[in-house]
Image (cartoon, rainbow, N blue to C red; front, side, top):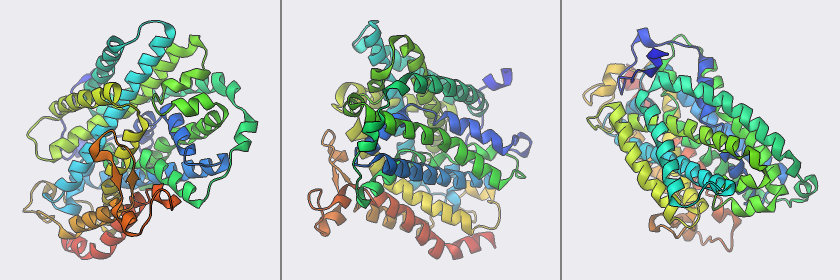
Length: 477
């Protein structure tokens, strides 16, 4: 255990062969821990909000979750080939300096998720304390933030070995407590209400799929190789893909299905989940389980935030800041404080700014994922690890094909997303291509589909696969 409590010294460097260890099955634990979260039930209520029946919601949820986490599994394969963090390997695609574009987007997305998860933990703690009569107000929220953010930052500082150890126990504890939560709340399930939910159209189904895709796996693609880089080069590619995808997707798949059942059965949950996505779930719980419930909630959120802060620290270093990885984690802590203040004390509603952030950052991240996966498919050899750290190497300074493809894919994608959030000026967005086509929320159900996220992914993949082949061939010559 002593070795697990040492601060990891690895940053952007390639992991030495002597330190590459483990089996693909070990990828299950960090990815499962980061996604065993009651937040999946809240996501389910929001998916239903698009006007789906129970069966349609299950289809939308499962397709969005499995497909998006399969992208993470594919990107995890790059770690085996290159032994470096995901966004360092991305330099082979975009050029050492050109890679600053996707790295900045990636960093903002990861920090955004850290803020969301910590804020949810603070809100849920406040709700539980109030119901137990233990106190209300800012004091409880401030105390909750200090504890939650402190654990997340400390875990990020200690690094890989500590994270792998703690995530295993977070996963096991969360599975047990989640099973108890389901058992206690199952009595609230109303099958007649579930069966009575009206069906939506194809537009609503696509909207649900894209929301699930963006809410789950798309938020993790930029860290897909951060843990697989520690595996031996002889590790099974099928195993890496399978265990990463399975570990990440299994808990959300189960939780959203149960969440659909619970939200359709209980109007209080469906109505209140926008303002307090986790606290609203306490309506179906006995008082004695509130403490185990908040433990379950915090374990899930910390599991996700710990992975985020580790990857975001690596992203910050990739941007060129001359810091140690653990110093980068400290910067994340400051940004978490600022973001949490907004969500907990300023925002009038949680859902709308959350959804706006998902789509606004999800478009360029989807474009990057498509480009990176296409580039990975084109490569026949392992990465030239030394060339990842110099603009004078075979990967060059800027790859205009990849950078141009990401810009084009993002421009098209942004044209087909819409966010009505007015709480922050920069999150109010109307897709300009929607406007050019005369589409509005009043005359077209497709307006709210946010299909631009999927279009960005497709354009990124197809564009890079068709136009990037010669570049890859020159690099590998």
